[in-house]
Amino acid sequence: MEVDPIRDMEKIAEMKVILKERGGRDRLLFIMGINTALRISDLLSLSIGDVLDDEGQILKIVELKEKKTGKTKRFPINESVRVALSDYLGKRHGCDREEPLFPSKKGGTLSRWQAWRIISAAGESVGLENIGTHSLRKTFGYHVYKMTGGDIGLVQKLLNHSASRITLRYIGIDRERMDRAYMELKL
Image (cartoon, rainbow, N blue to C red; front, side, top):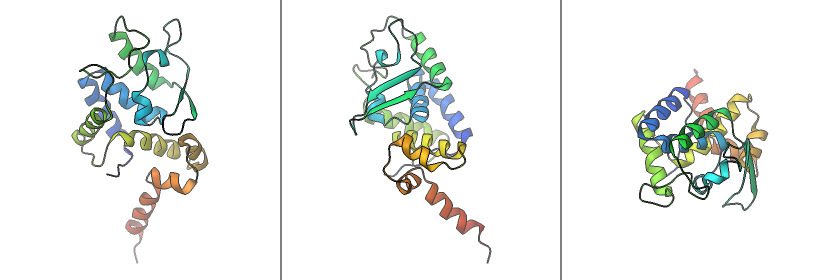
């Protein structure tokens, strides 16, 4: 199933509230996903030690090896992620650095399927369709594109895409432009 980015900032805010009610883990998953552009497999592979320094402080910059590409991904922890991490880790007392950042309630790491169910259900509860874990990465790309006034080259680089046309389609800009052309045409 093809999923969409979350374009509406109010829907993002509503999803944060819903996910906070479910617990800090789910909210952190959502916030990290829309602020880092990590694929769900990379998000779920994070351990507590991946986001903390040796003194237990949240890192300013995280580096990891992407599962899909094998390339090193480097990204700064922005204020939204920092606050969510601080809130979440503050409630997980006595954690080992090797523990998964996103543990399953049954033990081990949250599965991709569990993550999809969490994000999809939160999207549905705010009236969104076609929302899944990949929507997180697409949402990042969409909002960076809008924030930068359409700098597709930057978005392409951040998402590690080979061509700007792929990136435009990926973040839903092509479809958005085509729909707008139909709607604005008044012949």
